[in-house]
Length: 282
Image (cartoon, rainbow, N blue to C red):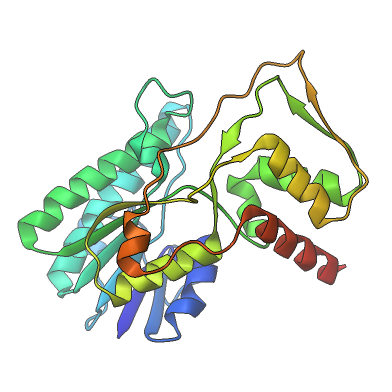
């Protein structure tokens, strides 16, 4: 089996690649540092994929923002880039496209977390599904929840989680804003990597949420961070600060039942793994 990872320098790709390499030849593509150069902003004429690919796993994304330039880039990269990639897959005879989206693609405009990233991810899903149906290209869309893992590469997209670990590592107290013990949903990159591998091997089609089957509250996250570093710090809420809203989603285990795999790494275990990595690097 021959697989192409798009976004081959992303933090998730670094975890996914060794899992895929246990059963396939894996090539990477991206703007730099990959086997093949490819930029999702390129014109469609430049999208040339290697021959003989069984699957393409699309991990690349633009994370948007509030400015015009950021919104434009999110739509250009996430939506049109995904469409061009799907067209290149169909033109090259690729057997399957696995598009890694985000659980935030399901948000509506009333959510406090609705932004150009979530909207562009939904647009990308809809346009890619429409195109793949028209050319009979097998498509799986996976919607991970908040993704974390070991190493500084994951800090960029989960700064709050890694700031809590920083405080715990320094034996400092953790102060949480507001009175609401907000809910969050995290899934470890290693679990997502295994899900992707099974989706590829079993040629799964369809769109699926890919999150933890249990939420965690801010106080639980802070407690897990303190425990991971055996920290003497304490946790308190500052009620003078604005409340933090929940960021939780309906639970769906349909993909896990289909591929016979459920997430294995609880947040307490995941933070302990990161603590071990940090201690080993000292």
